[in-house]
Image (cartoon, rainbow, N blue to C red; front, side):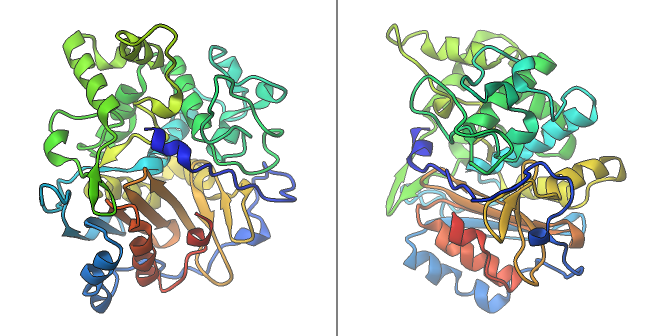
Length: 397
Protein backbone atom coordinates (compact mmCIF):
# COMPACT_ATOMS: atom_id res chain seq x y z
CA UNK A 1 0.00 0.00 0.00
CA UNK A 2 3.01 2.32 0.33
CA UNK A 3 2.77 2.88 -3.43
CA UNK A 4 0.08 5.45 -2.67
CA UNK A 5 2.67 7.74 -1.03
CA UNK A 6 4.68 8.17 -4.19
CA UNK A 7 2.30 10.67 -5.71
CA UNK A 8 1.22 13.59 -3.57
CA UNK A 9 -1.81 15.12 -5.20
CA UNK A 10 -1.30 18.47 -3.52
CA UNK A 11 -2.45 20.67 -6.37
CA UNK A 12 -3.99 23.84 -4.98
CA UNK A 13 -5.81 26.60 -6.78
CA UNK A 14 -5.02 30.25 -6.30
CA UNK A 15 -7.80 32.65 -5.37
CA UNK A 16 -10.39 29.96 -4.68
CA UNK A 17 -12.70 32.46 -3.01
CA UNK A 18 -15.62 31.30 -0.90
CA UNK A 19 -15.31 27.54 -1.04
CA UNK A 20 -18.58 26.38 0.45
CA UNK A 21 -21.10 27.94 -1.88
CA UNK A 22 -24.20 25.95 -2.86
CA UNK A 23 -24.65 27.72 -6.19
CA UNK A 24 -22.95 26.43 -9.34
CA UNK A 25 -20.21 28.91 -10.25
CA UNK A 26 -19.71 30.27 -13.76
CA UNK A 27 -16.79 27.95 -14.43
CA UNK A 28 -19.06 24.93 -13.91
CA UNK A 29 -22.31 26.04 -15.53
CA UNK A 30 -24.65 23.35 -16.81
CA UNK A 31 -24.64 21.96 -20.35
CA UNK A 32 -27.52 21.83 -22.80
CA UNK A 33 -28.63 18.25 -22.41
CA UNK A 34 -26.22 16.55 -24.81
CA UNK A 35 -25.84 12.79 -25.00
CA UNK A 36 -22.49 12.93 -23.28
CA UNK A 37 -21.11 9.40 -23.31
CA UNK A 38 -21.50 6.60 -25.85
CA UNK A 39 -19.93 3.34 -26.91
CA UNK A 40 -16.56 4.03 -28.57
CA UNK A 41 -16.74 3.55 -32.36
CA UNK A 42 -15.88 0.11 -33.68
CA UNK A 43 -12.91 1.39 -35.66
CA UNK A 44 -11.42 2.74 -32.43
CA UNK A 45 -12.10 -0.51 -30.56
CA UNK A 46 -10.23 -2.35 -33.29
CA UNK A 47 -7.12 -0.32 -32.42
CA UNK A 48 -7.14 -1.26 -28.72
CA UNK A 49 -4.78 -4.27 -29.00
CA UNK A 50 -2.25 -2.08 -30.83
CA UNK A 51 -2.56 0.75 -28.29
CA UNK A 52 -2.14 -1.75 -25.47
CA UNK A 53 0.97 -3.21 -27.09
CA UNK A 54 2.48 0.28 -27.38
CA UNK A 55 1.68 1.01 -23.72
CA UNK A 56 2.91 -2.41 -22.50
CA UNK A 57 -0.60 -2.86 -21.07
CA UNK A 58 -1.60 -6.49 -20.38
CA UNK A 59 -5.35 -6.03 -20.02
CA UNK A 60 -8.36 -3.79 -19.58
CA UNK A 61 -12.10 -3.85 -19.00
CA UNK A 62 -14.65 -1.22 -20.03
CA UNK A 63 -18.28 -0.78 -19.01
CA UNK A 64 -20.81 1.65 -20.52
CA UNK A 65 -23.95 2.72 -18.64
CA UNK A 66 -27.00 4.03 -20.46
CA UNK A 67 -30.40 4.82 -18.94
CA UNK A 68 -30.33 2.51 -15.93
CA UNK A 69 -28.50 -0.46 -17.41
CA UNK A 70 -25.06 -1.75 -18.29
CA UNK A 71 -25.47 -1.30 -22.03
CA UNK A 72 -22.10 -2.61 -23.17
CA UNK A 73 -18.89 -4.06 -21.80
CA UNK A 74 -15.69 -5.37 -23.30
CA UNK A 75 -12.54 -7.09 -22.04
CA UNK A 76 -9.18 -7.25 -23.79
CA UNK A 77 -5.95 -8.95 -22.77
CA UNK A 78 -4.83 -10.87 -19.69
CA UNK A 79 -5.10 -10.55 -15.92
CA UNK A 80 -1.42 -11.44 -15.50
CA UNK A 81 1.45 -11.86 -17.90
CA UNK A 82 2.62 -14.72 -15.70
CA UNK A 83 -0.58 -16.81 -15.80
CA UNK A 84 -2.04 -15.53 -19.11
CA UNK A 85 -5.54 -15.74 -17.60
CA UNK A 86 -7.89 -13.68 -19.80
CA UNK A 87 -9.57 -10.58 -18.38
CA UNK A 88 -13.30 -11.25 -18.01
CA UNK A 89 -16.43 -10.01 -16.28
CA UNK A 90 -15.32 -12.01 -13.20
CA UNK A 91 -11.98 -10.22 -12.95
CA UNK A 92 -11.45 -8.28 -9.73
CA UNK A 93 -9.65 -4.97 -10.20
CA UNK A 94 -8.20 -2.77 -7.44
CA UNK A 95 -10.27 0.38 -7.98
CA UNK A 96 -7.74 2.52 -6.05
CA UNK A 97 -9.11 6.03 -5.43
CA UNK A 98 -12.37 5.19 -7.20
CA UNK A 99 -13.44 3.55 -3.94
CA UNK A 100 -13.83 7.07 -2.54
CA UNK A 101 -17.01 7.71 -4.53
CA UNK A 102 -18.70 4.52 -3.30
CA UNK A 103 -17.93 5.54 0.29
CA UNK A 104 -18.99 9.15 -0.35
CA UNK A 105 -22.37 7.89 -1.53
CA UNK A 106 -22.65 5.84 1.68
CA UNK A 107 -21.71 8.86 3.79
CA UNK A 108 -24.37 10.96 2.06
CA UNK A 109 -26.94 8.25 2.81
CA UNK A 110 -25.89 8.63 6.45
CA UNK A 111 -26.52 12.37 6.11
CA UNK A 112 -29.93 11.62 4.61
CA UNK A 113 -30.64 9.37 7.62
CA UNK A 114 -29.85 12.27 9.95
CA UNK A 115 -26.86 10.54 11.54
CA UNK A 116 -24.02 12.54 9.99
CA UNK A 117 -23.93 16.34 9.84
CA UNK A 118 -21.84 17.58 6.92
CA UNK A 119 -20.96 20.79 8.77
CA UNK A 120 -20.27 19.46 12.26
CA UNK A 121 -16.55 19.34 13.17
CA UNK A 122 -15.40 15.74 12.84
CA UNK A 123 -13.56 15.97 16.17
CA UNK A 124 -16.99 16.05 17.80
CA UNK A 125 -17.63 12.57 16.41
CA UNK A 126 -14.18 11.14 17.14
CA UNK A 127 -11.37 12.88 19.01
CA UNK A 128 -9.04 9.86 19.15
CA UNK A 129 -6.53 10.04 16.32
CA UNK A 130 -8.12 13.22 14.96
CA UNK A 131 -6.11 15.86 13.12
CA UNK A 132 -4.12 18.25 15.28
CA UNK A 133 -2.89 21.79 14.82
CA UNK A 134 -4.34 25.23 14.21
CA UNK A 135 -7.25 24.27 11.95
CA UNK A 136 -8.15 20.85 13.38
CA UNK A 137 -11.32 22.02 15.15
CA UNK A 138 -12.84 23.27 11.88
CA UNK A 139 -12.54 20.18 9.65
CA UNK A 140 -15.94 18.76 8.67
CA UNK A 141 -17.23 15.95 6.48
CA UNK A 142 -18.03 18.58 3.82
CA UNK A 143 -14.36 19.58 3.76
CA UNK A 144 -13.15 15.98 3.57
CA UNK A 145 -15.53 14.97 0.78
CA UNK A 146 -14.64 18.03 -1.30
CA UNK A 147 -10.87 17.70 -0.67
CA UNK A 148 -10.79 21.12 0.97
CA UNK A 149 -9.80 19.99 4.49
CA UNK A 150 -6.17 21.06 4.09
CA UNK A 151 -4.99 17.59 5.12
CA UNK A 152 -2.22 15.86 3.12
CA UNK A 153 -2.84 12.99 0.75
CA UNK A 154 -0.89 10.68 3.08
CA UNK A 155 1.32 11.77 5.95
CA UNK A 156 4.85 10.53 6.50
CA UNK A 157 4.87 11.11 10.25
CA UNK A 158 2.52 10.56 13.18
CA UNK A 159 0.99 14.04 13.23
CA UNK A 160 -1.93 14.81 10.92
CA UNK A 161 -2.33 18.54 10.41
CA UNK A 162 -4.06 20.82 7.91
CA UNK A 163 -1.89 23.11 5.77
CA UNK A 164 -4.54 25.86 5.49
CA UNK A 165 -7.93 26.87 6.79
CA UNK A 166 -10.50 24.22 5.79
CA UNK A 167 -12.82 25.26 2.99
CA UNK A 168 -10.54 27.86 1.44
CA UNK A 169 -8.92 25.82 -1.34
CA UNK A 170 -8.33 22.36 -2.80
CA UNK A 171 -5.85 19.73 -1.58
CA UNK A 172 -6.38 16.07 -2.46
CA UNK A 173 -6.45 13.97 0.71
CA UNK A 174 -6.78 10.24 1.21
CA UNK A 175 -6.05 10.79 4.91
CA UNK A 176 -9.20 12.88 5.21
CA UNK A 177 -11.32 10.06 3.78
CA UNK A 178 -9.75 7.55 6.15
CA UNK A 179 -10.48 9.76 9.14
CA UNK A 180 -14.08 10.16 7.97
CA UNK A 181 -14.23 6.36 7.64
CA UNK A 182 -13.28 6.09 11.32
CA UNK A 183 -15.94 8.67 12.23
CA UNK A 184 -18.57 6.63 10.35
CA UNK A 185 -17.49 3.53 12.29
CA UNK A 186 -17.95 5.48 15.53
CA UNK A 187 -21.37 6.81 14.49
CA UNK A 188 -22.74 3.46 13.32
CA UNK A 189 -20.92 1.18 15.75
CA UNK A 190 -20.08 -1.10 12.81
CA UNK A 191 -16.77 -1.82 11.11
CA UNK A 192 -16.57 0.05 7.81
CA UNK A 193 -16.41 -3.02 5.56
CA UNK A 194 -19.59 -4.52 7.04
CA UNK A 195 -21.38 -1.17 7.07
CA UNK A 196 -20.56 -0.50 3.42
CA UNK A 197 -21.70 -4.00 2.48
CA UNK A 198 -25.00 -3.57 4.33
CA UNK A 199 -25.75 0.05 3.38
CA UNK A 200 -24.41 0.32 -0.17
CA UNK A 201 -22.96 -2.74 -1.88
CA UNK A 202 -25.59 -5.40 -1.14
CA UNK A 203 -28.57 -3.09 -1.76
CA UNK A 204 -27.09 -2.05 -5.12
CA UNK A 205 -26.14 -5.60 -6.09
CA UNK A 206 -22.37 -5.04 -5.97
CA UNK A 207 -21.92 -8.65 -4.94
CA UNK A 208 -18.25 -9.01 -5.89
CA UNK A 209 -16.99 -5.81 -4.25
CA UNK A 210 -15.07 -5.40 -1.00
CA UNK A 211 -12.70 -2.99 0.71
CA UNK A 212 -11.02 -5.99 2.32
CA UNK A 213 -10.48 -9.28 0.44
CA UNK A 214 -12.50 -12.30 -0.68
CA UNK A 215 -12.02 -16.04 -0.39
CA UNK A 216 -12.11 -16.32 -4.19
CA UNK A 217 -9.90 -13.29 -4.85
CA UNK A 218 -6.74 -15.37 -5.37
CA UNK A 219 -8.33 -16.76 -8.53
CA UNK A 220 -10.10 -13.61 -9.66
CA UNK A 221 -7.80 -10.70 -8.78
CA UNK A 222 -6.02 -8.91 -11.62
CA UNK A 223 -2.28 -8.47 -11.10
CA UNK A 224 -0.68 -5.06 -11.40
CA UNK A 225 2.20 -4.62 -13.83
CA UNK A 226 5.24 -2.37 -14.03
CA UNK A 227 6.19 -2.68 -17.63
CA UNK A 228 6.30 -6.41 -18.40
CA UNK A 229 6.55 -7.48 -14.74
CA UNK A 230 3.52 -8.49 -12.63
CA UNK A 231 3.46 -7.42 -9.00
CA UNK A 232 1.13 -7.68 -6.02
CA UNK A 233 0.58 -5.27 -3.13
CA UNK A 234 -2.32 -7.07 -1.45
CA UNK A 235 -0.34 -8.85 1.29
CA UNK A 236 -1.88 -6.78 4.10
CA UNK A 237 -5.46 -7.41 2.92
CA UNK A 238 -4.82 -11.13 2.53
CA UNK A 239 -3.32 -11.46 6.02
CA UNK A 240 -6.08 -9.42 7.63
CA UNK A 241 -8.78 -11.41 5.84
CA UNK A 242 -7.20 -14.64 7.11
CA UNK A 243 -7.00 -13.23 10.66
CA UNK A 244 -10.65 -12.20 10.59
CA UNK A 245 -11.73 -15.60 9.25
CA UNK A 246 -9.75 -17.39 11.96
CA UNK A 247 -10.95 -15.14 14.79
CA UNK A 248 -14.61 -16.10 14.71
CA UNK A 249 -15.41 -12.46 15.45
CA UNK A 250 -18.14 -10.95 13.24
CA UNK A 251 -16.92 -8.63 10.50
CA UNK A 252 -19.09 -5.85 11.95
CA UNK A 253 -16.80 -5.74 14.98
CA UNK A 254 -13.65 -5.04 12.99
CA UNK A 255 -13.11 -1.32 13.40
CA UNK A 256 -9.85 0.55 12.81
CA UNK A 257 -8.66 -0.25 16.34
CA UNK A 258 -9.23 -4.01 15.99
CA UNK A 259 -7.52 -4.08 12.59
CA UNK A 260 -4.44 -2.29 13.92
CA UNK A 261 -4.24 -4.49 17.02
CA UNK A 262 -4.49 -7.70 14.99
CA UNK A 263 -1.89 -6.67 12.44
CA UNK A 264 0.59 -5.43 15.07
CA UNK A 265 0.29 -8.58 17.15
CA UNK A 266 3.43 -10.22 15.77
CA UNK A 267 5.39 -7.08 14.93
CA UNK A 268 8.26 -5.54 16.94
CA UNK A 269 7.34 -3.19 19.78
CA UNK A 270 7.07 0.41 18.65
CA UNK A 271 5.94 -0.52 15.12
CA UNK A 272 3.42 1.93 13.69
CA UNK A 273 0.88 1.30 10.94
CA UNK A 274 0.00 4.41 8.99
CA UNK A 275 -3.44 4.81 7.35
CA UNK A 276 -1.84 4.56 3.91
CA UNK A 277 -0.85 0.98 4.80
CA UNK A 278 -4.21 -0.17 6.18
CA UNK A 279 -7.28 -1.88 4.80
CA UNK A 280 -10.21 -1.77 4.74
CA UNK A 281 -9.49 1.75 3.53
CA UNK A 282 -12.18 3.62 1.62
CA UNK A 283 -9.52 5.85 0.06
CA UNK A 284 -7.88 3.09 -2.00
CA UNK A 285 -8.58 -0.57 -1.09
CA UNK A 286 -11.80 -1.30 -3.03
CA UNK A 287 -11.70 -4.52 -5.04
CA UNK A 288 -14.44 -4.62 -7.67
CA UNK A 289 -15.46 -5.69 -11.17
CA UNK A 290 -16.51 -3.75 -14.25
CA UNK A 291 -20.06 -5.06 -13.66
CA UNK A 292 -20.15 -3.95 -10.03
CA UNK A 293 -18.68 -0.53 -10.58
CA UNK A 294 -21.03 0.02 -13.51
CA UNK A 295 -23.89 -0.91 -11.18
CA UNK A 296 -22.72 1.84 -8.82
CA UNK A 297 -22.54 4.34 -11.69
CA UNK A 298 -26.06 3.34 -12.77
CA UNK A 299 -27.23 4.45 -9.34
CA UNK A 300 -25.27 7.70 -9.47
CA UNK A 301 -26.63 8.81 -12.86
CA UNK A 302 -30.17 7.62 -12.07
CA UNK A 303 -30.69 8.53 -8.41
CA UNK A 304 -34.28 8.01 -7.21
CA UNK A 305 -36.44 11.03 -6.26
CA UNK A 306 -35.87 10.53 -2.54
CA UNK A 307 -32.12 10.98 -3.15
CA UNK A 308 -32.40 14.18 -5.17
CA UNK A 309 -30.50 15.97 -2.43
CA UNK A 310 -27.58 13.61 -2.95
CA UNK A 311 -27.51 14.41 -6.67
CA UNK A 312 -27.24 18.10 -5.84
CA UNK A 313 -24.41 17.46 -3.37
CA UNK A 314 -22.33 15.33 -5.75
CA UNK A 315 -22.75 17.64 -8.74
CA UNK A 316 -22.39 21.09 -7.15
CA UNK A 317 -18.74 22.21 -7.18
CA UNK A 318 -17.33 23.32 -3.83
CA UNK A 319 -13.56 23.53 -4.18
CA UNK A 320 -11.91 24.76 -7.36
CA UNK A 321 -8.77 23.25 -8.89
CA UNK A 322 -8.54 25.31 -12.08
CA UNK A 323 -10.80 26.84 -14.74
CA UNK A 324 -12.06 23.41 -15.89
CA UNK A 325 -11.88 21.22 -12.78
CA UNK A 326 -13.26 21.26 -9.26
CA UNK A 327 -14.68 18.98 -6.61
CA UNK A 328 -18.19 18.48 -5.26
CA UNK A 329 -19.00 16.14 -2.35
CA UNK A 330 -17.07 12.99 -3.22
CA UNK A 331 -16.89 13.55 -6.98
CA UNK A 332 -14.63 15.48 -9.30
CA UNK A 333 -16.39 17.94 -11.62
CA UNK A 334 -15.15 18.75 -15.12
CA UNK A 335 -16.61 21.45 -17.33
CA UNK A 336 -14.85 23.44 -20.03
CA UNK A 337 -16.32 25.54 -22.80
CA UNK A 338 -19.34 23.97 -24.48
CA UNK A 339 -18.58 20.48 -23.19
CA UNK A 340 -21.01 18.66 -20.90
CA UNK A 341 -20.42 18.78 -17.16
CA UNK A 342 -19.00 15.42 -16.08
CA UNK A 343 -18.51 13.71 -12.74
CA UNK A 344 -15.18 11.90 -12.66
CA UNK A 345 -12.40 10.23 -10.68
CA UNK A 346 -9.20 8.45 -11.48
CA UNK A 347 -7.65 5.47 -9.71
CA UNK A 348 -3.91 4.83 -9.46
CA UNK A 349 -2.38 2.10 -7.30
CA UNK A 350 0.88 2.02 -9.26
CA UNK A 351 0.30 -0.99 -11.51
CA UNK A 352 -3.42 -0.37 -11.98
CA UNK A 353 -4.78 2.76 -13.69
CA UNK A 354 -8.53 3.39 -13.80
CA UNK A 355 -10.97 6.16 -14.67
CA UNK A 356 -14.68 6.89 -14.86
CA UNK A 357 -16.82 9.64 -16.33
CA UNK A 358 -20.49 10.07 -15.46
CA UNK A 359 -23.11 12.40 -16.91
CA UNK A 360 -26.32 12.34 -14.85
CA UNK A 361 -28.14 14.66 -17.26
CA UNK A 362 -28.07 12.01 -19.99
CA UNK A 363 -27.95 9.08 -17.52
CA UNK A 364 -24.74 7.81 -19.10
CA UNK A 365 -21.36 6.81 -17.70
CA UNK A 366 -18.25 4.87 -18.63
CA UNK A 367 -15.61 3.13 -16.52
CA UNK A 368 -12.27 1.67 -17.61
CA UNK A 369 -9.99 -0.51 -15.46
CA UNK A 370 -6.45 -1.42 -16.53
CA UNK A 371 -3.60 -3.43 -15.03
CA UNK A 372 -0.46 -1.66 -16.23
CA UNK A 373 1.54 1.34 -15.04
CA UNK A 374 1.04 3.10 -18.39
CA UNK A 375 -2.62 2.19 -18.63
CA UNK A 376 -3.84 5.76 -18.19
CA UNK A 377 -2.51 6.62 -21.64
CA UNK A 378 -4.89 4.08 -23.16
CA UNK A 379 -7.70 5.11 -20.80
CA UNK A 380 -7.43 8.68 -22.07
CA UNK A 381 -7.94 7.45 -25.65
CA UNK A 382 -10.99 5.44 -24.53
CA UNK A 383 -12.55 8.50 -22.92
CA UNK A 384 -11.90 10.64 -26.00
CA UNK A 385 -13.54 8.02 -28.21
CA UNK A 386 -16.55 7.71 -25.88
CA UNK A 387 -17.24 11.45 -25.59
CA UNK A 388 -15.75 13.06 -28.68
CA UNK A 389 -13.94 15.45 -26.33
CA UNK A 390 -10.53 15.82 -24.76
CA UNK A 391 -10.81 15.61 -20.97
CA UNK A 392 -9.08 18.35 -19.00
CA UNK A 393 -8.68 15.91 -16.11
CA UNK A 394 -5.93 14.04 -17.95
CA UNK A 395 -3.82 17.20 -18.13
CA UNK A 396 -4.10 17.53 -14.35
CA UNK A 397 -3.64 13.97 -13.11
